[in-house]
Length: 503
Image (tube, rainbow, N blue to C red; front, side, top):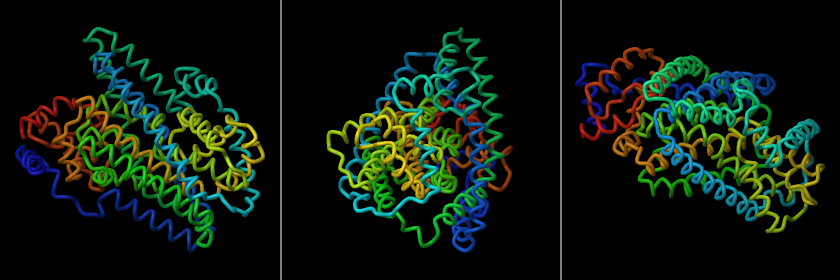
């Protein structure tokens, strides 16, 4: 299949995807350079490193500017292009059902790990005064968000049409996008086609903005890692190490065990999927935010063989409803606070807390610090004798110091979980080009043309040539050629037919 892709590209007389460009022209290489440089600066010049956090924050801030429009355009195009609300509804129900099952499994794993290893048992350290103050703020924020009705009114449903875009509320933007898509789907076919085309054009402009912003990813990775290491210091990297070790170990078990089995059942290998998205995972490590790579996932998964309808629905929805790493963090963090306070939470209470967290874990999109607020909201909503306001503040203060390291684990697990979910659900719906996916997992270079055109993946600025190549390849029906869908808007179903015929 990979050979066919190469031959198909060469047959059009255009620039082929391979040979692979030099390593120093790849984004992932410079992200690694940024991460390593950040660690060195954090160790050697911690005072200076403490002033570099703004680099990562600024990058995430710029990415968040276009997250709302990206989700809106992608979901609208994905649903409205179907022209069949029943089909879209079936896709949404499958996705939500999958998310619910994964949420329960992740919460359960967190409880099991907390009870088995008891990372908070015998903990005698006192929280830093500054951490205590920050924890008080997080607890206050969480208290405002607890409960089902506040979740529906404040987190799920928007107060105005443009408000969610201004406030970067992923879940509310998703609701608006679904409503808009349903309205467009009810129009006559000619008008619907024109409107979908218009939204696709807007999406292409937005992806052009992303292409520019992504050049700052290595600098952001440098700033984020320098700040993290500089704040913790070499001698304190082992502080609360047991909690970090248990958390990261549980996330690894979830990814390799649970997601590994799910991937195997769907016909692909989770380790190859991780290799495919290694660039995005490195960016997450540097920025500690899975939102920073959401637009890249939209393009890469479509290029890998999933239909634009499935990708457009599952990825944005998963960013609010499929937060596997956050779920592990919530139950494990809650047990740590109980254990650090010298208390014991009965099994029945643990189950009740986990059921509550099925709700409170939703809507906590993968931004640094969101886990702390969600944990505070969950504990305050649970209330009772186990989680007094004082215990919550002290417990959160103990976690604040290592929250960024744990936030990276949350974001990585969330990201991998959403990628696997998209491929699995696409397989369920018969909207996964399995031959294309197999070829891409064996040779991730096959998606580079699409990624370069949409996001400026390589240092050599050849986007225009790549876009031309993709168009000619798609028109000529060459098998497996990486065609360019700058906004992720190409018709994957037609492409599947071409790949099958060419093969």
